Length: 202
Ligand code: GDP
Ligand code: MG
Image (cartoon, rainbow, N blue to C red; front, side, top):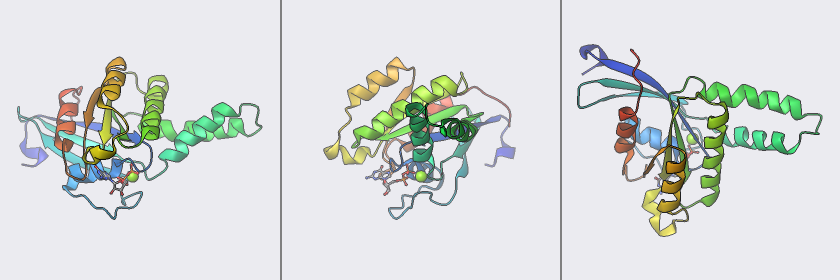
């Protein structure tokens, strides 16, 4: 059924944050198109995709998904660089460029999905960076979700489930481990998000 056939519905802006290579674009592609493309390059073409999910009570949720086109590392590194170089004459310039970039991306977002790779502890640190960033500069009502992706690579796990659960609990976040490759928990991720949403009309 299309959106117009349904009596109730709402839309939601969702942004993905996290280090390059953790699988953000693959998660989106798996959710929206049901595909996993091992040859996918950094951007996977689109930076905006939408998908409508119909909940059990026949409410339609239209996810408007913003996926970074590979500038995530740039945004985070620029911010760190600014913090480390306050004396630098260019610091203000960089700070302005940073301030213009990242908040534009997550402005108006109701949901931020912050992704790390369970085999990569550095990506977990980067996820914590994004959580702090959103706590400081994001919409105060934003729903933050922590996602440990590449769960199929559990043999190479370097971030424990317990560490992630503890961190998520402390920060009031929902946490789930996913695999874009096997599609494990991908649908569940968006279902759990849908349950937590404030509702505004389409
Ligand atoms: P992004 O930079 O965060 O958007 O990461 P991508 O979605 O481009 O994925 C980066 C790489 O990780 C690609 O080579 C994917 O094939 C791979 N990848 C993504 N998700 C998974 C997953 O769940 N399991 C495994 N094994 N590999 C994945
Ligand atoms: Mg990507």
